[in-house]
Length: 88
Image (cartoon, rainbow, N blue to C red; front, side):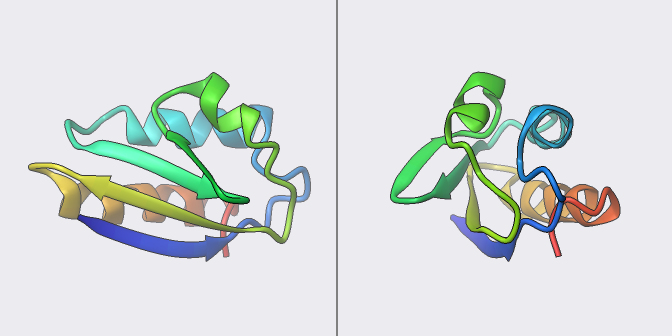
């Protein structure tokens, strides 16, 4: 299992558009991808799950990947979220 802990820098947090970007990035991989915030963990491939966390800006989140393509998944997801200025 691979994981990273990052800070959300998008001014609206991880809601609507940023959540859609995150879910789309996670959905490209076979590995199980989860996101944790505030003591809760949800499937990052579920838009409703990600939105239910209500992650505000400047929050620390952990993204974890577990499966056959976990290395590629964690790298690609982090790259996409940084490129979109969702995480810093």
